[in-house]
Every structure is written in C-alpha cells, then in structure tokens.
Length: 439
Image (tube, rainbow, N blue to C red; front, top):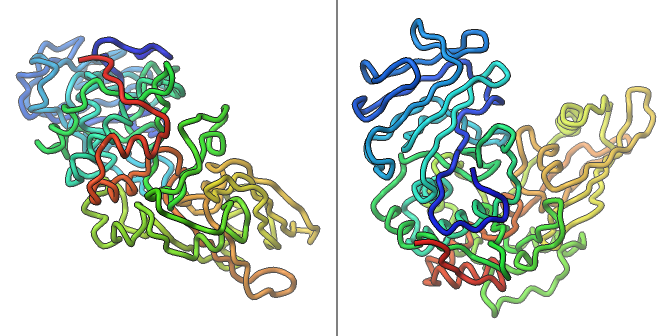
C-alpha cells in the first residue's frame, strides 16, 4: 500500500477495492479469456474452463467443494500486459449516487478475495500507471481530446500519491473503484488514443511547495470553483480557490456568490464559462462523459417537489416525522454559491413548530434528492402558500459535484478551445508546478 506523504521514486503497485463489503455480495463470477494466463491459489494450480464461481460458506469462500479462507488469482504473464484481462461480473458503480448500476469490469493484474462481515471483498493489485490509464477513460470518455486525457491522468496521479484521505486503509487497500475515491472501471474503455495520452505523462504530478497537490476534481463546477475547506474538513489549500471557470477577460458583476441574491442571478444566467452549455453543448456531452454518467443538464438544472413529496423526502432522510415543511432556509454558502448549512422549519405530528439544521455540502446533497443531488449550489423557490406552508418547492442549481479543483467538463471546454494540458492544470490549481517524480 501507499504510504502517507511519501513521494515515490519508482512506480508503485497499488491495491484497488472492486467489490466491497457494503455491496453485500455473497457470490462472485469471474471469466478468463485465456485461463492459461492465470492461476488460483491456494488449492488449484490452474483453472479448468474459462469461468470461476465463488460463493460464501459461513466465514469461508467456496469454489466447488473447496473451502478457502482467502483466494489469490495470479496473472502468470507479465503484470504490465493489458491484454486478456479477466472479467468480473456485476460490479457496483456509483455507490450511493443517482447513477448507481451494476457493470462488468475487465481487470488487469492480480486479485485478492476474502470474506469481510459475511460479504465478499475483492481487491485488484496492479501497477499505478495501468490503473491511471483506466481512470482516465472511466472518469471521462476516451473520445476526449488528448490534452484533457493528459490533464485528467496527472490530476488522478497527484490525488492518488498525495494520499491524504486513506478512507479504506482498515480493509488493506488504497482506493476503491468508485466516485468515493476516483472511478476505475477496468480496461473496457481503453483505446490507443487513451493509452498514449496516459503514457505521455508517466510519473508526472502537480506540486505546491514540497508536497504533491491533493488534486480533487468534479464533473462540473457550474462556472465557479469551490474552495477545499467548504467541502472537506481541514485548513484551506492555496491551490483551490474561488475562481471563475473562464478566461481572464471574463467578468461577472454580481459577487460574492455566497450572497443569496447574487447566487440567484448566477444560477438564472448562462455565462460563457468553459463548462457552460454555450461552450460544450448538452447534446454532444454524452460523447465525452464516462459510461456510467447519465445524460442531463450539467451546467444548470432544476427539481420540482410538491409539499407532500418534500415532506416525505425529508422525513425519510432526516427521520423528522414532520406533518409539513414550513420553510427551508439557506444559512451559509461557499464562494461558488454551494450551500454548506441549511435550516428546515417544520410542523411535527402535534402541530408544534420544530427546526433542524443540515451541515456540509455532502449532507445537503444527500438530503435534498431521493438518491443524491447534483450539487449544493442551488436556491429554493417556495411557492403557492397554503395554510402558511408552501405547496411547491423548486430547487434551481448549478454544476454537478463539489466543484473544487479540476472541472472535468470545463477542462473539456478548454481542450476544445485549444488550451494546453499545462494551462489547464495551472488554471484549476493556481500556483502549482508540474514535476516528474519517476520515469
């Protein structure tokens, strides 16, 4: 596993969680395009046929009549060979988000499989650069311009090696395969164009001072980037600032966006930012976003709720037992307009007025959508009052994701306008420098 704050001088091997205990899978199906290239240990020196079904028997894994505490699937050929990857069926992508689905993943490298809390844990072990090739074309499409693929790869490598969060260290792997960390859906979307884009940046990271940048990124900032401290716990990072996702000549008079009226004007407008539909049209966007992403309005969007729908939603998400929602109050916003604190006034079952507070960009997004809201950069129209309560709620918002660091659709807009990879990196992470840490 990677070590915190250690800058490697050679390419590291990494561990990626593919099937997690929270997925609650009790069986696993693997397919091998060439079984001679793999061995299953312990218990078998080779694979008969091209399929392997693994189930759970109490605290053990079972293959046929064999019961094993853990299983290793070893690649017998060179680990740097991307050909003939094994296929893992029905892997969860988009855990906890509105785009959650099961996909099949072709994985290079080795596998480790064991039982945790009565469910399967599957870990993929492979060289970092192979992993990054797949990240670049899992996060965004291989059809993206090469300058964007290079930027995405450098940012993903930097985030990985900065190694700040270590969310999954207790389960003995570096990152998971999903949006919780960064998307890794295997080799299925790789093209020569994508591989070349990744290989040309081998070993390159962005640094600020003597540290690798904790280079967060999101799908669309909505036209204004958010700061680190308004999304995650921790001190401000100097290379994550409230900056317009636009060229230096761009001007917007209604600032700051942390003020309610300014945010409303911003969301109701369509400024010509790099991530706007004026630069990258919604009709062509599906050619460039990841395969698990959904077609939709990434720059500006809205959701409509009746009083009953909003009450039911907040009762489910917050355990309120409310009879009606009286008012939703935006308390605090970051510099991109993203809400970081919201108050909800409601009537309880005895018709007493109550209030609760929702804190953090992530929690607000979790609460105000049946699965997960696109962004917390929204305002709320509370319409048609009946008996001192709104009959309708409309959420009007901007962007998809937390908005800090690289904006993927904005970087696509920059690439299509002819900006270089280095210019993109310096735009989204001001003050950073590009460093080659291993060959």
